[in-house]
Length: 593
Ligand code: ACM
Ligand code: ZN
Image (cartoon, rainbow, N blue to C red):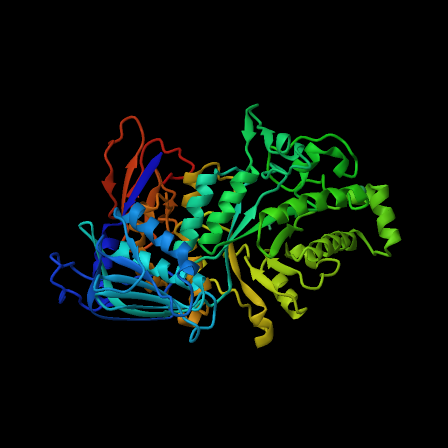
């Protein structure tokens, strides 16, 4: 067996050069209270702001700084969440308290301001920093919150011996897309409340604004529903192949706490309640929901399962309306994601009730029956003031007015939706599936994503409201693995969706240089980030008495070391310089990294 490691030391050398160039020199400062001169300023915010310029000097962030909320155009209370968030950040990440004052004084001040003019989008904001006062202004609290995300990054990027020197910058920033999401599948594997709260913090830090929370599946039903308690008593637990029990669910109290936390951070949580497919856990709890009524177990392997909700049985719709009524009470979002993907029709083809429904409603086939199913649920949700989002299969058999299509089997579904006048969210398997490994979707591939496909009119382009990265968790059993899949790729997605998505305005090399310093920030947030790409590829040339092996690092900054594992082999790593021969009894299938 061959083992290899790579080192990123040279990447670090590049980083320092970049820091110096990207911000102006701030080594001079007219504030006497400054005793330490930071070496260089770093303005490498991700996602990249629309406009940023730097002046000499910096704002020193420490416990003498006070927070003041501008009360000219809003009440002070309107920004209570943002003040609290800032205070928590200072306490938990920087290690000191920040006081709030009611009026401006000579103290160095962070001034948060709601203004009634000048910025259009909800999350748009301006930041002005001139040594003694750091102003963040926006027309809405969500804009102030996004400005605070840039502020937090600037603080952490400019830490020097536990001092924080925020460079004097001017920023004007606004998002390109209104919907910037992460789908998190908590059904295939369950993630604790603490993990969800950590992800909400990280989404906010990188200006993502949607947590699409996948809560029901064949392998587990994860939210408590009072009227149907077996959904969690039975549906939240499965017996694994090895006989062990696996499961868990969120109580209503958990969900309320998570939603309240997200709301304070201006992150919208959109729950996904899958129907008519991916519903075996619910059917395990209540077998009458299926066409056969037969008892099934909560699934313990992966794939697409044929037990789905019966479309001919009115009790199924009564059940789903009960469930959705409780879901609506928990989630304030105007959207409910109803799934709609991967629903095999074999049970419907064999079911008398389903066939009768097709006849009674003059439907052509089971695809139109799926459309009937979705439209019936949509009518119910619309009557409660909610709009539906569904995977692109909801196009089959006729798309309901007002439904938002989430395009995953490529871009075509989204394209068809907007041509039909519906809105679309783009998360194609080609760029947005973070469960795929780095061979298929590496950081650069994510960065190259453009949610706007070719061949649309301006009006149609405007119906593409944004994109999501999809984090399915069949092979993600724990938080560490989850982090390594999501990070750093989500930083590329955040820049695609917040900053320019058009390839002409993007520069991967420049983004990648900015990214390097963010690993310290991710460490600070306890993120077990993964690699940016497959660190190396290799080539084996057959030969006697053993093959020649050539290693190709992903880029020239990566230094490869290897060691051969055999009884008589050297146990130390060897610097890779050139092609080498593996002689002797070579029997590995492939090298392991
Ligand atoms: C999906 O990946 N089945 C939406
Ligand atoms: Zn049926």
